[in-house]
Image (cartoon, rainbow, N blue to C red; front, side):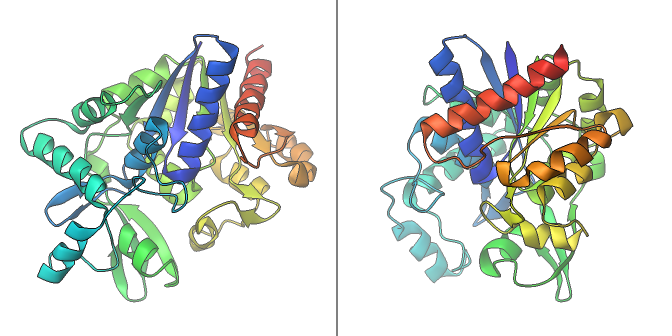
Length: 322
């Protein structure tokens, strides 16, 4: 079976780890593709930074900093401090020296004519990931946030201001000229199951869906599409997704996010939706809207609970396929 996951960020990385753990435990030989958000990418000190991709890469390689939740383990930050001293990098965006090695390699390949997809393949070949990573698009579609103080790159709004500046909206630069990468398109068309990770619906999943042709590819996919809520009992599991949802007029609840994605039968993208047991009351209303919902434990505490969540998502997908 071929499993395709759509997502990004730390939530996406943790979920993909669970899917990989499930496949390893079952010995099924299932393959895993991940379509990764590229809206978080940006340029710093002449280097192309790709936070969502790198969170997935480092987590799957087992070299991520699990305490901070981002970057490489055992980091030093001498180079980042020197860049800030020279005024070529903002002091509020710190990169570790090992992490900078990744960004330098990425930028060198891009400037040499490689596509973003090529770079993903080269970076992914260093470690046995057990997963194939594909950019949602090979085009630059950096996310910007509209605020009362003007338009900010998403990273400045997220990291520097910690989403404290009220957002009026989100947009991706040059999105109209983008198209799904060949790898993303093939991973969706060839999937037996498509899983929507519990990533930020607005700035991790949203930019993927905003790529022209991506929604059409999902609607045309033969595989059932099952999403996993990143909202539990009215609260975000991690990060500041509530600030993003508020900005687009969506309530911070598992039910509201599912309705935001919409049922595939009605032109949305969901066939099924997993909510936490604390949100079980939302299952029937969602079913009435055309989204098959199931309440299961969603907290990812360890490899066992992560693998179980993947199993629950795949079982729901199997029931929809039948």
